[in-house]
Length: 263
Ligand code: URA
Image (cartoon, rainbow, N blue to C red; front, side, top):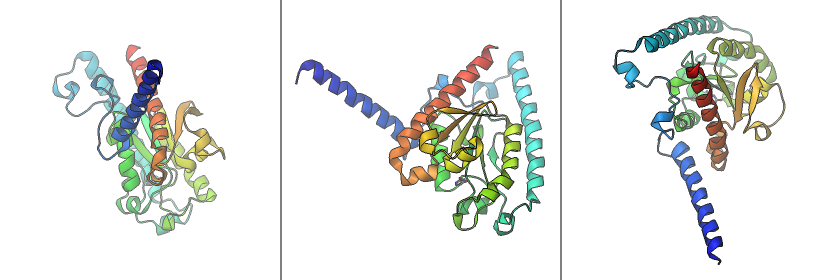
């Protein structure tokens, strides 16, 4: 082989290896943070200087504004949750154990939308706590964030019996609650996980395969579509595609956050 060709081959092997390592690190067995410390998307890690040292005036104003934003949104979400507790629009409220309203930071920059609660979520009253949820946590950590930094909700808030697919009427009846959640949280970026979230929010019949990899517009909010973590558990080869999608989400969040800090 010509030395130039050997070099080319070597470089392409190295590139493939690097991308494989990134994927494995991101969603593999080990939980590691891929974002550099100067590149973190996470808003205020518990031991960050902002929490340890007395804040400067500008910083303390920012923290105060964030707190009141958080308090208002927490209250608004709680009011919505109370309203949902008595929802009888469809029969799912009779078969469910718990309402699975949503979890995370009420003032999150990034909001994930899944499909519907499964058995574990129904029992615990929290979205994405089963195997798919553990994978979602790794996906979140791979972009330098923590589960508590983001907000996670589903299209349906009650478990469909036997984990069957959500029915169109159920989606139509539950959708106003999700829309309200998004309006309250006002995320900078949305991420639809799987077919039901993507098709419902974008009002389309297109497949995740064709929608993923680029940002769509949901009422002025950029929305990434990617594969559902439960699908990924069955199709691990598509982890690479999800990693590509999530890097775009991470980069857009960093761009939007930097833009804001410059204004
Ligand atoms: N799958 C979902 O779509 N949502 C959950 O909360 C759990 C699994």
